[in-house]
Amino acid sequence: MTLWQGRFSAGPAEQLLAFTASLAFDRRLASDDLAGSRAHVRGLGRAGVLDDAEVEAILAALDQVDQELTGATFAFAPGDEDIHTAIERRVTELAGSAGAKLHTGRSRNDQVATDLRLWCKRELTEVGRAVVDLQQVLFDRATEAGDAYLPGYTHLQRAQPVLLAHHLLAHGWALARDVDRLVDARRRLDVCPLGAGALAGSSLPLDPDGVAADLGFAARFDNSLDAVSDRDFVAEALFALALLGVHLSRLGEEVVLWSSDEFGFLGLHDAWSTGSSMLPQKKNPDVAELARAKAGRLVGHLTGVLTVLKGLPLAYNRDLQEDKEPLFDAVDQVTLALGALAGLLASATFHTHRMQEAADGPAAAAVDLAEHLVAAGMPFRSAHSLVGGLVRGEGEGQRSLANAVEVDPALGPAAAALLAPGVAVTRRTTPGGAGPGPVALQLERFAERLAAEREQLAAGGPARA
Ligand code: ARG
Image 1 (cartoon, helix red, strand yellow):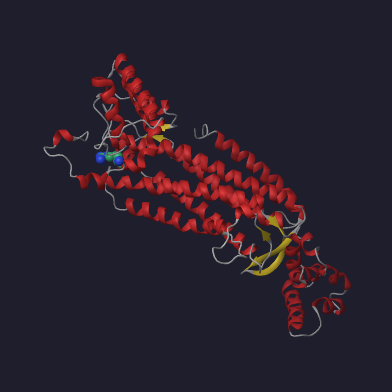
Image 2 (tube, rainbow, N blue to C red):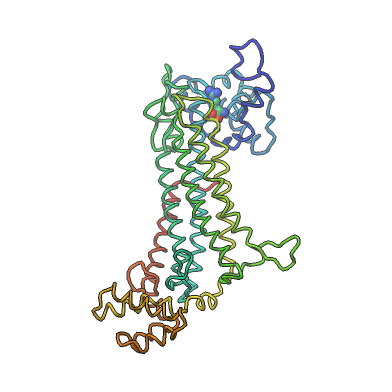
């Protein structure tokens, strides 16, 4: 039996139920559904639609359902299409005629939208916390990296030396924007749809403002049609998660590159690498590869949900049920990837000698030579051309760059000193630059940013139970 059987003379086909049921995945909304029902019932009590005894009876039944669900003793029935109908059925069994009043003035349309917003508020906060944990690892590793440096790349060609701390924090700042986006998405979705009913509100004296406040929402909906059909918050959450996934993917790719023999910049801890079933010597960066790959799945979820929403007429359509699996999976996958990358990076070894060796080629300081000439009054374009000529000469087997600089009348020994190992990186002195001066300041700013993120996330309420 379904809850809507009254209008029908025949029961639903088995295949209909198999196709339309969402219980298998929306069980994850159980605690939010219970919270929504409690607030709804209290609202009906305040409005005088239910008397005190009825409110008490329903709340007691909801508590009992809560215990059954958490203790895994809840017996689902064949007609339970989704978590909402399952809970209502059981409440009615437990509280009789009072229980049959639970759904007064409510539809599953405003109910499910409320549940999912409650779920998002909590889970996006949790994802934010996991991002901060990864940022903390990047910060710790950056702090301990001191003055170690490596080549910075453009086009994956060695360009200029940068501090390792600077490189690590570059990923950290991208993640900071992700936290910002999660918090921002959470702020915008903080609106309670309960009281919109199926689509048009109610003839009963509901109290949407009181219910919204009871549930900890910042506001109630303004338009009942919009309240039940709006899934912007799901799309926004999926975008924030997809872009976060893209950042993790880029980080993963660098771990893969750096841990290769060709780069040799990074050694993975045994606990965070995998072996080969055939090749005994292999030690593989599977964690980083999967982090790299998850972005594909996350972008797919975003695209999928946007495509479901596109062209839907107002108000609720069953299509909207397809919002949950992608959202749940996106949160799960991102959470796993964040934890795995944090573990991998916290335990990895940076081979800083190897990094510095790769960064110490004299050509990496070519722009310093040009800037040396600029400081002496030469136009940058002429300086660029002069130094470019010396680099070309070295490539063509003439004298070495160091030698050519030494004997060049415009350059000479003071300029040649700029090519010494470790010098170039110290000359990146401008704000936000890659040298020790600005990076020390950047570390301070990053620590402040981390503290601010923690504060914002704490304002989102308690952590997941
Ligand atoms: N399981 C449904 C969903 O996730 C709940 C809402 C059902 N509403 C309806 N009118 N059939 O969207």
